Amino acid sequence: MAADELSSKLNRRLQIEEGAEEPVAIDIRSEQNGSEDKPGVANADSELGAKLLRREQLNDGQGDHVQPSMKVFNPYTEFKEFSRKQIKDMEKMFKLYDAGKDNYIDLMELKMMMEKLGAPQTHIGLKNMMKEVDEDLDNMLSFREFLLIFRKAAAGELAEDSGLSALARLSEIDVSTEGVKGAKTFFEAKVQAINQSNQFEAEIRQEQEVKKKQAEEQKQRRAAFKELRSAFN
Image 1 (cartoon, one colour):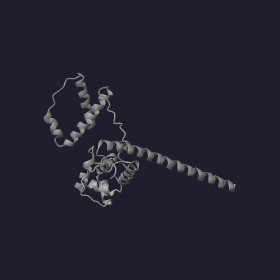
Image 2 (cartoon, rainbow, N blue to C red):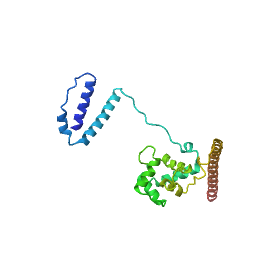
Image 3 (cartoon, one colour):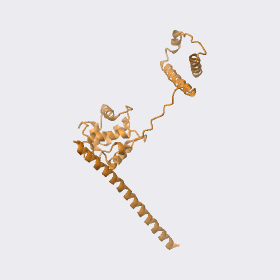
Image 4 (cartoon, rainbow, N blue to C red):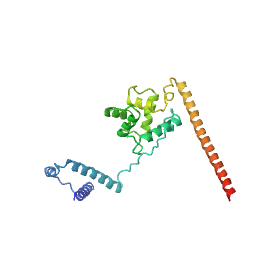
């Protein structure tokens, strides 16, 4: 009944806006008598009404569809101060404590992480940790926000007694020689950027060599197995 009444009101509003009907004054007191005890229901009806009206406008060609953001996060390009190995180690750690496997670390998962690292925090301490790197204010840490912890640690931007400092220090991921901390001048920063680029390329080549070697070893094992099998046929 409530849905039918709401739909009727929306259709009437559309007819009034199009000039098909004249607006009629509503007795506010009588409306309040029916909804005074149910503010939550009124708010829900209002929100539902706005959504239905928005859908009606889109169906009539009014308004524009809003496309979701298609920006893709690439840790290797955004966090160039870290090596590929460091980022992979951080990703491994992030996935280890992402108990819900939803690609986020919430407050409870952060609590468990700090306990396992041997640096338990109070509820307020955990909230302060989250607040310092939670850029979208959703009370959860994405992988990008997780990497921000180590960026701040490498740049010396974390207080020694802070929870984030303890997390970075106890994670066994060495970031002390990385980041912008050692780049004190423009020329030093340029040299460091070049070295990091060369290191990045060297790591890719090394990974390719390892994969190539593994493929060759697998090929040799298959050949040996075929030869052994043919000996028994």
